[in-house]
Every structure is written in C-alpha cells, then in structure tokens.
Image (tube, rainbow, N blue to C red; front, side):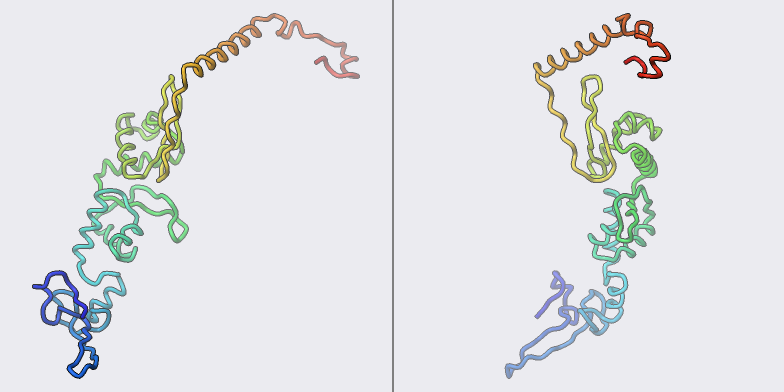
Amino acid sequence: MRIWGDDPDRSCGAQIMTIARLRNADGRWGTIATGCSIFGCARPHKSRGMCSVHYDRHRRTGIANGKDEVIAKIRQRLMERPTTCTQLAQETGVVPATARKIAVTLGAQIVFRLGRSARGGQDAYYTLQRLDIVHAWSALWEAMKKRPQASYTQLGNASGMGTRTACRHITQLHILGLVHISGWSLVERKYGRLWSFGPGVDVPKPSRKTRRERHLASMVRKRTEAKVTADENDPKSSDEFRPRRDPLVAALFGAAA
C-alpha cells in the first residue's frame, strides 16, 4: 500500500491512497483505483495519483497543487538574493517559464545579466530588493563591465556613488557570491582588493615581504634612481657632445652610432 500525506487526519477515505494493491482472501493480487491524492479534491483518479485536472496542470506547468507554497518560496528566494529563473525552477520543481511568470507577477526586477543561458544569451537575475539597492547593484555591474578589475574607489567614482557606499554594496554582493576578488593592488605600501563581477574563487592576499626582502628592494631602487640621476647630469650624454660625421661620409657609411 502506498500512502500520500504525512498527516493521518487529513489522509482519510479516498485521499489515503492513489492506487492500492490489495491481496484478496484467495491469495490473488488486485488493483483498486481510488480518488485524487491532492488534498481537498474528490475527483476520480486518472494518472500518477492525480485526477485529470491536477494531472494536466502538472504536465503543463510542473505544479499540481500548492501554488501558494511555490509562490512563497519564490518570493523568499528573491528577497534573499538575486536569482535566475532556472535556479528558481530547480529549487521549486516548476518549469523556468512558470518561475519567470511568478517572479514578474510578484514585481521582481532584473538587476543584471550574468553567465550563459541554454539559448546562448545571458541569464537574467531577478530580485525583490528595494529600488535603491537595485539601482546601486546595476550601477556597479555597469562599472565592472567597463573595468573588469577595479578597487572600491574606482567603482565608487565610476558608478557615481561614494567609496563607502560602493564598499557596502560590494561586500553584500560578495557575501551572496555574485562578485569575487580577482587581484590585489599595492598602493602606498598597502594591498587593496580588486573586484570582478560574477562568481569565482577569491585570489589570496599576497604575503608580506620580510625585512631582508624589503631592504634588498630598497637598495635596488636607490641604485636605479642614482644611475638615472647621474645620466641626466652627465654633460656628455647630451646631443651637443655626440660625434658628428661629414654628410658625404654619412651618406656612404651611415650616421655615427
């Protein structure tokens, strides 16, 4: 016997089973078809434990019953983070077209497009966040498209928001897994993060140089600067002290090196 439903009080009568295979008194097996397994439906069984109405609805949309539960799951998911219709369909058990229709009906907006869809285009990420957050994330996405690797300050200037505001939104997107650290920049002896849009593995922060390595790098830098200064101050390096050739000799043998 196959029983549908976890609540025995709700699974009674024709609702307790869809197709029950019962053994007769003489030892033979018989098949008894009962009503629809969807709670509250008394229609006769057709296929897969459902009546004709619920079975056709499940075949078309992927939802047999519990539309309110599916809508509540999609609303909660869209409030938590931007999600594609494909991901919503996988999590709720509906087809992507139905997930998109429910998301649009709930008032979800496209915040950005990432990755590649099955049709070759980019997947649209829907969200139910506030409009100011949607506009800020869209501005950061547009800024990162023009500059694949950018710091907080660069993204703040490119998107028209302050550095602190850009830092706050990027941190939130990083927690959601929509941006990642693609590199590090050394500015005034401090490493700063370089951000790129899309999911990815964060590049670890470079290890700090030892005291000896910093001393050697400083010595090399000082020697290079001293050599450049000496070359600039050397009068023989100017054009006035370069050897000149007779025009006829230069035409026959080339100019002086």
